[in-house]
Length: 139
Image 1 (spheres, rainbow, N blue to C red):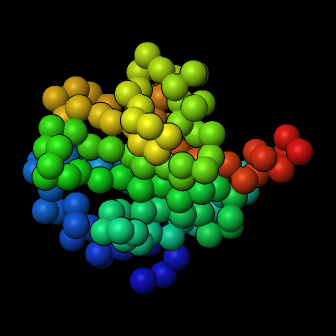
Image 2: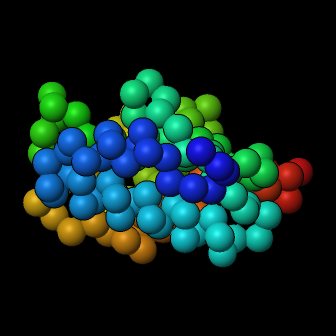
Image 3: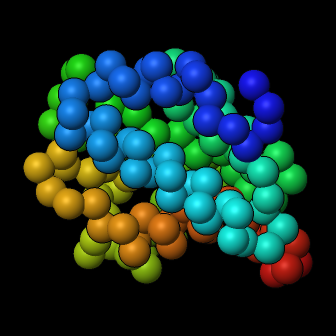
């Protein structure tokens, strides 16, 4: 698989999710690729499975890895996972809190029976995709 192409392994994984989860994870996947293409310094995305979960990482090193998944043990939700060593979840909690439910310092949870808060998700994904670029600017 080439860089910035959709991984057949991720496509197959998502295909086994129930319809509402498949739709939400697919939308998150599309948002990541769309954002990466439009953000300066981000560029191509590499897709892979990390810990069995769909994962996306900017090849440029501009940001941190993003994972998203649906799990049988929590069948009524999907989650976006971010690097717990970053401040991304803290930022989500303080700046986007009304729209996002955060778990610990690693995950944002979305109920399957609710629409995705797309603006908040795009903001969060943009932060993750440019995390290292933003840190360099602040230094």
